[in-house]
Length: 125
Image (cartoon, rainbow, N blue to C red; front, side, top):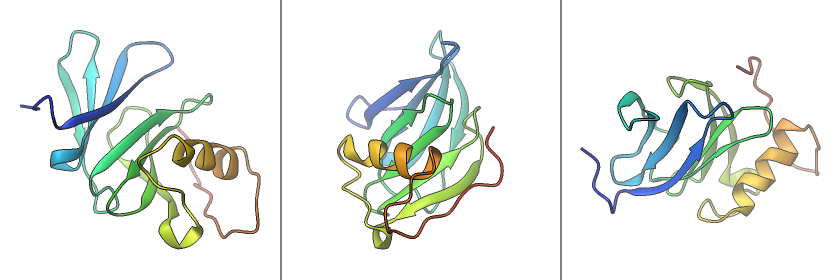
């Protein structure tokens, strides 16, 4: 069960059938159905204190890890990691604010390179 204090951010899939919720207390991303039923639970070492979640315009699910200082991309169902897109050493802004998602959306998914190293996922679902 999730406590109210553990849930920090959520995002809705574009078709509205899934809700993605960060459970920072348990370092997890939960995928919920519209009725609130838990469909999937995902965790990864690169997602310590999952702080922020975002569904990009292209439908990519991005999760910022506050303590791990990372941004990862998860598949469209919220079941598996596709890639670690950014780390602290890449110049990542604080995972606790919206700049983290804007940074990744523009630099990594749109393909704008701003003098920083980056990784490109091979498979976007």
